[in-house]
Amino acid sequence: MIHDALADRAAARAAHRLDLLRGTTVRAIGRDREVRFRAGEPYRGASRLTMLAPHLRATADDDPRCLRGAADGLALRMRYTDPVPHREHRPDGDIGGLVFDQLEQFRVESVVPPWFPGAAANVRHRVEHWLVTADADGITQTNSGLLLHTVAAMAWSHLTGFPVPALVEEVIEPMRAALAPEFGPRIARLGKVRGEQERFAPLATEFAVGVADLLGAPSGRPRRALSAGQRALADLLRGSGPEDAGVPVAGDPRHLSEVDGYRIFTTAHDRQRDATGLVRPAQQKEFRHRLDDLVRHARLNRAKMLRDLAAALAIPAADGWEHGLESGHVDGRRLATLITSPSETRVFRAEAVTRKADVSVTFLLDCSGSMKQHVPLTSVLVDTLTRVLDELGVTTEVLGFSTDGWNGGRARRDWARAGRPAEPGRLNDRLHLVFKNADDSWRRSRLGIAGLFKADLFREGLGGEAVRWAAERSRALGARRGLVVVFSDGGPADSATAAQNPDGFLETDLLRAVHEAETRGSEVHALSLGVDLGHFFARSLVLPAQDRADQSMVDEIIAALGAGR
Image (cartoon, rainbow, N blue to C red; front, side, top):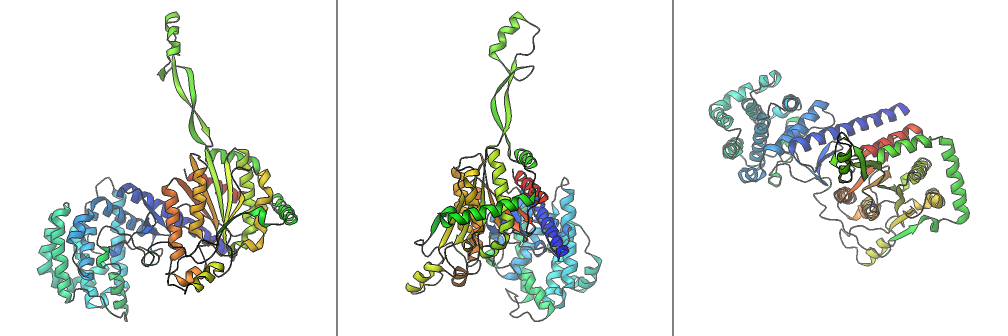
């Protein structure tokens, strides 16, 4: 079991590194600073991007080069496709739209400049892999699927100049021979103008409409996918509706299709409380004694943490002037020296730069029920990091979020009295907890941090609202760099809210809250316990869900915080 957990954690970290690499590629080549990959999916801000061409829809089961090829293809589409003419010329209907999207994608992949040799090789590998696996998955078992697969292979080969894989060529050759008299000349005309989207688009529309007409129906979407071939065809047409016309559009059916905005039924019962006010004095001392024992047994190296955190969080800052230099700005106060000592060269000055920790760190702890089991670990990490940061002069806060009741609490009772209106929005009593505020030192907050051991604080979790709250408090601290560090073991969960609202209501709000916080200058990190929260947080570190903190875990956390700069 331990081996499986380590393997899962290693796999999650490898996937996260690949997400970072793919996101960097798309932002650089595609010239879009907002794109990030989370859990293998591309996002612009909080909105998931739909991959219009089927071969760009790589999954975690594909090899890493395929995943890189799909990211490179997305980047090329962003760089070389103008969305306005693409929407104007895109034909109606699933079949026509699919073929048109594929032609435009093949066009941009055929004009990769020579200074992107890696991208060219990756997208070629991705298309070849897709052609072979789509055939193996049964796409050629129906006449419609065989025709569409043949058209895709013919168009890609003619536009890029690469040969169709031999395994695919054997299957599509009879269909290609039948299509060649009519569509061969059309593909040749497309190839001549592949460098000019304005001239390419009308010809691609004519080509796509011709393919749709061959199938005899505008949509071509099977009503019931019974055979393997029909299922493969339905998957091919997924995401090819007219609402997707354009260079990748926002729209995640799991989260965004039914969720227009975040709503709250009532805030009348919401509370923000200091943790010390919820724990009896005798219990506070008992909890603090328990936490001190755990910290002592963890044997964490505080001196090393001080050095590492200082290096990770310090940023260059101007600190006056350095005088008596041999290069830099002329120092007016030393010009007289040239009269008395003409050979003197140390008459320059330069701005002195020092490294200062102009940083604030806000720890935000998920206090939903499942996190109760992780308190021995999270309390030690938060307490130790807060203490060391306090010694460095870094402003810190320790916050938590939960609900004031189970299954909706008083908010749900108010909703029931109001006649149970549909889709009421958030339907529970929000509870925000302050274990340590920014004005208090670690020493004055020792009892408050120990309040994490109060078991009945842990109920359900409204993550999106908590991230907004923590980010607002972080920005109010006025530091040049404000970090919000979230400890959690899963997505937001509130049973009453989930039961009365569209799927993904709370998850979508968390995505939007993280995006809003990042946009407004906060740096949001997630320390996830035993699960990968990369879908919600671009900066996510998977920690083992173990009972005790150790030095290697702390080192990883500090490295992650430093890498966020």
